[in-house]
Length: 444
Figure (cartoon, rainbow, N blue to C red):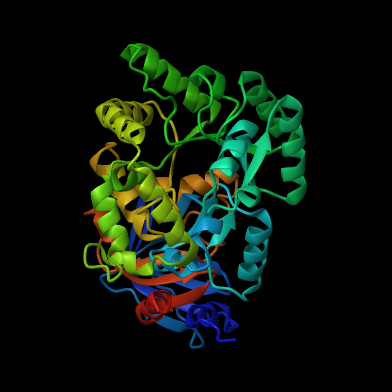
């Protein structure tokens, strides 16, 4: 059997982690908002051991020239679906500086196997937090199976018909060892409440779609995906909305946006989407060259659904509602709500790793965040969400060595997060040459 070059590349045993010294670099710490110039960062194993000026670099350390460059913590993508994206997505995340991901619905056996291999050093990929299967109303799961399609529904969706089944689902997911739960649909309010109570009792964070009125969701869900309410909160006046968002902030409910999904997928019309899918050489969008296998099959199916007149009608309604959603996100920020940035990787035309840079750009251009604030959303906030900020999310002594070295300053222009010179993942240096080899392996 001929083994694909990509799999060979990903599965080659990793060399012993080098001892690194990144010197004369500007360090950007979004957690504190601090910028340190002309400092040295020492890495031993998978940890940062020293950060500061005037550090004597031991001779055994491999030196990386950071002069006129910028070092920031590795990015998180807080909404991905790895079973659909496949192992081929791992180098795409890393090459784009995404060193950690939050999986929001996949085959748990597959994710656990991948995570073990990544953590043991047998596989090169991002750190993974995962939810296991998506908790879904049984009626929806039955419909999906009747309609057919390429998705392996039984591996990805967990059907729930009533409160008792909701409690059983939480117990099973807890036994598997998930990091959080993801719910997409439920049979009714009582089932949602049972699910939320069971998650709380199990010590698991409940994430997912807002399946009830905002006042029911706040306090019961630890992160809400996409929007806090649909349709938007136009029935409330500004004072009511702001009070709701202050309550959201007080309850510690995070807002997990995936706006790049709206701009880059949902509102792309059928003709344009089909042209992008059929452009195998990437002339319209060079990122298309990296999409193959199951993910491409799923994308093609999603694109064909755009021909449905009802879907086109819904897209028109959504387009008219966009200003209200942007207003809500801006007011949430002003009232202290914490955000998580995610791409919804596996949705049509959302490119693993690449699309996160677009999401950060949206935070700055549409939601009113400064570049530093946007970087905080994608570095510190996810670590804070999981209570692991002592180990991740900043460039400090003792933190894990997940970092991105940039040629240009992202604080001048958030688009500069794309100017990646090197990525450090678990202490392993992936310079520009290695990153290019990884990308070529995916294309081939």
